[in-house]
Length: 474
Image (cartoon, rainbow, N blue to C red):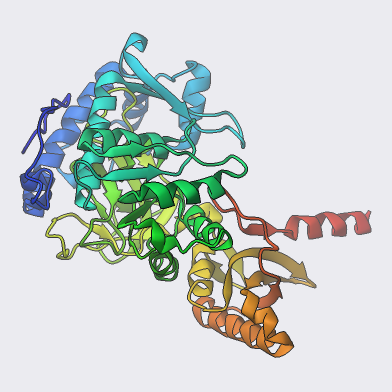
């Protein structure tokens, strides 16, 4: 296989023919069975490396009675215990700051990133110099598959801080030879300035979260600018579900006149473009299995589910040397298929991307509901004003679902009749999609706050209901 050794050793001067669809043709189009045979060999090598370099993995596998020499098939690999984020935080508390799963000397660390720590101890990502270069190679492959070529300009509208998404795009675009515009995001007034810069510079490609892409379109229109004036050909997104949801993908594509592609896995799993669509295969995401091996597993047994079924992604680095993740449990939900792709790549595919975190799922009257399902329904309704809130509440003994939805200005211009028609359509469409009755409240345009990063749309006030009842019972 082209440039596939461990530790990785890429030719930094390599470029494919600009007319080629593939960055590494042999790796991307080889028969799946041949690739899986190579992956088994690599898994054994990576596990041996981690076993010798990391007390964390050696202890975990010894306790489970697993040794790298035992791994002869992909089925054998399914017996390797999964790693959870909780275990990573505990390892970093035990062996601060990088944890006892760091497999390189600290002096070889090149970049430090991490989680924000808003819900507990932050997780620190230590990336070695060799890994940083390899991430550039991997991300460049994904961007090439999306249609980017040397000299194209990439406008990066994501926060440059601990967040890995923006840095990964920058690293890959630099390796690919693109013009990089690291604009950033998150500061007040920045989106209006982005409109001006996009109109002036007319970049080829744009990267952000899907919710920010929709917000940018709104701000552009408020500034009197048609987003199609930016001349974007490609828009790719990560950080949250959306770009694989037809209603949201089509809404962004219509607003900007651009090709929309979904990508991304987990910050711990950088290079996260190892799950990404391509220019020809932009419905869902390909699993670039020779970068990061992804298993879609049963959430209880952590064994692979058959193609066509739902499960949770479990990821394993095949090229990382600094903090390799080996069977990291994502906690997300998706389903996978293994069918011929329009781009000719022979990878499995997530046809609807990532639905969302299993923890994000909520149950109303016995039905499992994901916020992304509600997003998909609303974004298909022409009168939808671009933002909503999902409110889970309780009346009497039953949970209730209320969706507060903005209508477009014409809904209000049409008076009560137009508002009622929009509400009835939204309630009917949600009932059909979710299987549960949903109350819809229509609110004025721009009355719900927007975000400059990831959308947070679910409000669960059942806890408030419980607390109130407890006080009444005292």
